[in-house]
Image (cartoon, rainbow, N blue to C red; front, top):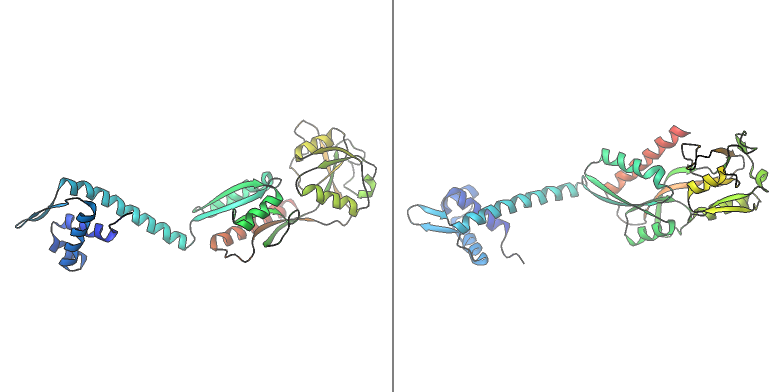
Length: 306
């Protein structure tokens, strides 16, 4: 436990620089006894002899005093840095956001969102981690993360507050040589007897199953994967059609195949991308800035692709 104070160190430095207690007291605008008492206390708690005392020439630093002065100067600079950083934190010009990202959203949005926010707010660090839907909700509730970029489905919303960022419409994906590939849109009933390639992601599977049920069809499942790109490759290879809400910019799959995306004519429930936070918790300026930035970022992205 530190037993001396920054004030005692400041008085010691003033005496060292001014060469005497009286001179230091004048510079500090305090009484000489206050300076003398601070020096005595500092020497007492450190066990150092800081000055040689001369009746005619005032005080001169000992070897211990000269070395200790170097430490004091570094300590004072660190204290000033702490004060500057505390001021920045109080003004929320600096800080940290712990952001959880649903794993299927991450490759489409996370890097661009974080990079653009860092460019606009360089004093704030965004630490992101990819997680499953249910894990994201739990992490927000227990305070492990501050915000979650996720869907508004697949987790219990109790205790969470949502800011909507985008609304995604489901789409049909077929192989480029599929008989329906030349059409711009399709009704799901048309695909009732077609084999179905299932994206078995946490939360995603239930959403797509609900869409199929809502349309009154139950297609045979031909292929299952937790990977969006594996699903697209299976579709390109002729395993059947799939339903997706995220559209990669290229129609070419990882294995060199090709797919075609069709709009769905049915009036189906959309999937919403949201920024989730803990309900009722104080959201400081940094979190509000990030939320506002995310809203603008998604608006610009989806306006450009509309």
